[in-house]
Each structure stands twice: as structure tokens, then as C-alpha cells.
Image (tube, rainbow, N blue to C red; front, side):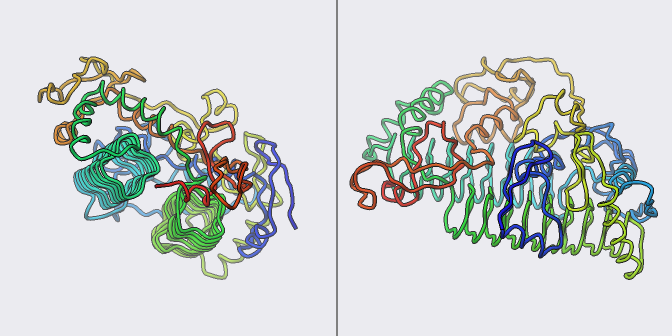
Length: 576
């Protein structure tokens, strides 16, 4: 039976469906006391992807780049030291103290066990890419995050299987692409969104199999189109020269024309994705029975998830994939099974609860930093029978003596750890990007917050004063410290970056990498759904005749937004 409950955190009501109760019963956990949105915020607060700091390894002392600030409340080791046999995570094991809450003891352990400098995978292909995080199998990459199997890429987030591409977001299988969001299998495509299998094009939205197109939306299998109008090859090339899209001024002018004339006026499908059966969410593909899911593909029976790849029977998940029968998990996977309330447990891990950064383990409860261990609680080794008895004792104590957070919430067994236990400062976390808070509000709720140290640089050039074309730029630009036009922070142009702009005939960016990322995210729909009706009123759609289509759906396009949003049936009739 469906139940409506009040969220402990935001006090709003939320619904638990009958199939949700079946899932919770299947994995032996109580129903949640936080609403889905607050649960997502809580998980996102445990992962830092984009913020890097310079500090020293607490074991070997060498200077390094890390996702943890210099004065983080725990030791931080470089990758070589952390994965070495120079220290033993099991050496931090301790007995469970029944006079203290479990979460108090877990936090004490978190502050003792060393952390790895970042979440990059150990791989022979992490070559010449020190300024990265949450990445694996990359070479000659700079400031890319959540990335896998990339070469010669920079300033990108969630990029996979790509070459020679800069400033990309949620994209894969791209080459020589620039300033793109949700781009798949494209070559030499710039300033574009949600397009696939396109080449030699700029300013595309929702295009498929298009070549030599500029400023187009909703096109299929087209060539030599500008602002959705066809041109001959000769006319197209002439118009290209007239637009001067190799200049900063020309790009800015055309961008506004594209947004006003085509982007906002072209009907769009109510969600981004394809090949789904029984689903709700956005940026979702090849799923079955997957609901309230975002940036998710190849899943079955998944719900309340953000960026889940190759998952089955998974609820409340964030970041990565390849796991089964798991609940309230962050950054775990790689063929893992039955992971609950845990962060960064991968490598075929099984039957793990309330643990943090444990690799290839099984039957762990409240552990931190263990590798290839089993039957451990608070990093202490037990016999199988002892482990099972103590685990049940701790779960009972978590119900009888729950942890009370500084935010006023009560955390019993079945809740993901409170944000105040995160090893990541809230302002460094992914939560700040999707659920932004002021410093004052975060501290009031007890969330960790600390401004990281930044270098002091003398500005030598302002972004708005950069040359209009790349042809006017000399090699000495790599020595300049440029002031971002938007946030006023300093940034540089790297040699790799300069080479890319010259090859692509693109002007230098006037914004720093962080501001460019922020501008890209403005085109990203939120991790939230609204109930809406199709806006189509076209009379030749025989299924609804005259008047407005009656189809309704859940969409991440809020009701007050200006875009024209169609159901899938009407949308497919109109794309050309």
C-alpha cells in the first residue's frame, strides 16, 4: 500500500510506493525517513569531483595535487603510498563501544585512517595527467573529472572514450569537439548539446547524423543547414565566411541568434534519451523499470539514481556503476553486490554496509580504507560467527540509541550517514553544484565547510582584452595570467590548449575553466521532475486532432520554462 510520510530534513511530504516497500523488504532495510531529493543531496555531499588543492603526502612528504585540502582532519597519502604495503589499514581496527553511537565511532575511525590523494583508479594508463580526479585510463589530460579512457583532453566533466576534446560535459566517444554537453559519437562539433553522430558542425541541439550544419535543432540526416534552413554547398560555405565564427565577436552574435530563433522555438521531447521501457527521468537510455533516474543507462529496476551505469535492483545511487542489489551508495561498483549506505567500495565488493573506500572486500561493517578483507567491523578482524553476532548487536543499538545530527535529524540503521560525517567539505562537494547553500546556512545545519587556499597571482591581461581571433595570438600567451571576465579569478592558457585552438581556428576563451563549466551547466536540466501536458497543438496529428494533445508525462522541464515540450509521439512526428 502506498504511504505518505514527512521528510526529516525539508519537512515536505513524500510518497513510498508499494514496489518500494518490496525492495526495502528484499534487501532487509527499513523505509527511508528522508525524501528522495534530500537523500540525493546527502549522497552528493560525500563526493568531491572538481576541486583540487596542493598539499603534501602525510607519509612520504612529497608535494602533490589532491582532492583534500591541506588541513583536512585526517591523513592524506599520495597514490603510491596509499596503495603500497608501507602501512596497514587493519592496524587502525578497534572494538565496538556500546556506550557510544555507531556513527560517533565511525567518524573517529574516518579521522584516523589515511585517505588517497584522489579517487583516480590505479592503472598503467594514468599517464601525464596529475590534475584529474575520479578518473581512470587517461593520458595527457588536464583538469578532467569523472573521466574514463580519454586521450589529450582537458577542462571536461564526465567524459568517456574521447580524443582531443576540450570543455565537454556528459559526453562520450567524441574527437576534436569543444564546448559540448550530452554529445555522443561526434567529430569536430562545437558549442552543441544533446546530439549524436554529427560531424563538422557548430551550435547544434538534438541533432542526429548531421554534417556541416550550424545553429540547428531537431534535424536528422541533414547537411549544409544553417538555422534549420537548407543551403547548397557553395551557399553554405559563403555564409560560413560571412558569419565569422572564428572570431569571438562572431561567435557571441551567432549564439544569440541561434538561441532566440531556433533553440527556444523548436519543439523538444520531454526527456533526453532513447530505448527505455517503463521509466521516468532524464538523460536516460537503454533502461527497463528505471524511475526518477538521471544520467543513467543500461539499468533494470533502478530508482532514485543519478549517474548509474549497468545497474540492476539498485535504489538511491550516485556516480559510476556495475553493481547489483544495492541501496544508498556513492561511487561504488565494478561488479559489486549488496552494498548499502557506503561510499567508494568497488572491485567486486560484496555484502558491505556503512563503509568508506574499501576495495575488493566482503562482509564489512563500519570500515575505512580496507583492501581485500572480510568479516571486519571498525577495521577489526573477526571470525565469521563473531562478525554476524556483533553486526546484529550494532544494528539493534542503532535503533535503540540512534545518532542525532546537528541538523536535528535522527539517524537509525537504514539511513545513509549524515552530511556532517562527510570527509568532503560541503562547498567542495557535488552537492554544492546541484543543491547550493550559503556558508552560513551550511554551517547552521552542521555541514563541514572550509574555503581552500588559492594561489596569489598578478594579473597580466584581462579576458575581455584578448585578441578577437587565434591568428592574432602569439606563443607568449602561455606566460600570461588572465583575469576571467565573469568571476575575476586568474587562469592561464596551456601549450596543449593553445595548439587545440589554433588547429580548430577558435578564439581564446574569455572565461576561466570553472566559469566555462558553470555556463555549460546552465543548459543542463535539474535532477527533478514536474508533471506536465504535451504542448502540441498541430492539427495533422490524427491522434489528438484539433486542440492540444492530451498526453501527460513527468519531465525535468519545469512548468514555467519557455521551451516547447512535446510527448514522444508528437515529437517524433515533427523532427525532420
